[in-house]
Length: 337
Image (tube, rainbow, N blue to C red; front, side):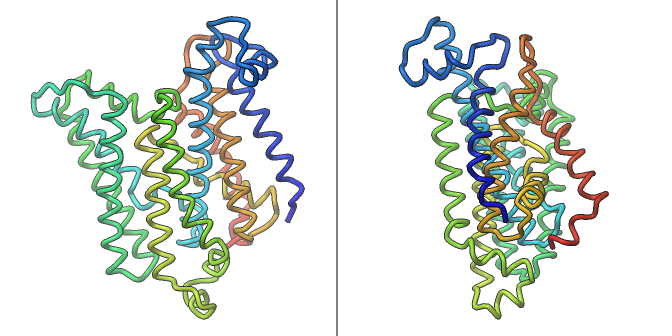
């Protein structure tokens, strides 16, 4: 365990946050950003508008999403004792996608014109879809006691939902299909301050079960039988982990779209950096690395000096896929699980 890395990580997080604010089509000096945020005195009114109305909420969403996806990914890897489990294995992300697909594609598929589709409507549809799938998974978890069976059921939920989305996409019009495709690429910059507050609240609510049961996660690594012998109520832990992951992953997907690989890769990076399997270290470590990674990915996706931006899902996939492949090749999984 390397506790001294946490202050270093917080420093890197602050620098990454500042870098994220400064880069973009308009380059803003870091000193101007720091002085403007602290004192409220900006050299240019345009810089103030860019930072306060676009880049600052986007950077905060990147932090929230990085924390939420990393924490939920670590929960699922511990719960299933599977190094390749991620926050979306229960089909909750697909449920959010189903809600958005019904909103955007269903009307077009049946020849209807649905007006008033905005970011609030899309986020609401995503939350409802994720909640629907979460309810189904919870119902199955109540009947099924085996974790691996629940994993298979979650994957089947995701496959069935993806099939419905494919059917809706096939029959929908080009404009609606393009709108849904853009959403599915992920975006951190489409939220206003009120929506940023809701995302932050969801991350807080989803993290409460983790903080309250953090000592129990170490025992779960050795299996449910061992955890029961240590006096842990495994059924209650199962529900807490499912609900926590549903709130974290479902909420982030609903507001930001699907963001790949962060939840899978970051927990392994935390194990490598801190050289520990203690969840009292891994949870804050994963949250810290996840926030830093998503801030840097978003900064890279801004294509500094250019007006174009890359979808955040594409950037995280380009970064996360090599990490996961390298981890598989080195076979570090066997030591951690």
